[in-house]
Image (cartoon, rainbow, N blue to C red; front, side):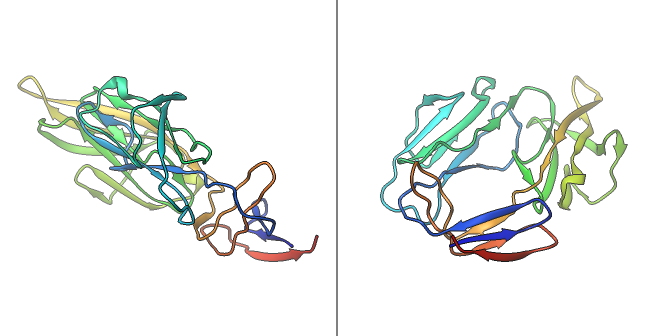
Length: 234
């Protein structure tokens, strides 16, 4: 039995009942969920696996493809340094490695922070973040060099749920008290809203190995205005 779920004109996924045994591919999440971060701050990377994964999984962490110390589900980077910047991956037991996730550590007085990955349907916030210990005032946000109005809470801009049209170059300005006076600093970041990350929560996943596919049983879907399903027997 092959079941195709049509999510839009171009997106679909396949439900196949074959056999069980392939391992879940983990996903890395940040806490707090910002990138970049300022030097000296801390961040925790979590290696999240499917709820169907059982047993005591051993975890491995990688930066730029090279194994780094850490065998727990969470990798804590305390008082981060610029040298901690890099592309991180994790592995849980016999799973494939996760997709690479970028972490940047900056020494700038002002940085514009966003989640490491943004997908259609996510609720997006941006933060105009200055290094700890500095007095600041007057944060202003921009998109493609045009000022963005409220809602702004402190130094954080709440954009809300997004689609691909929200992609663009975002910036912020803030007055920072430095060397006995206020100076205006700015920061920019390109925010890409990915199209096609439609699976919001999956109880059983599709995983690929050399000769085995694990059937899916329930999916909650995030995007796609025209949804339906069609069964095809094989």
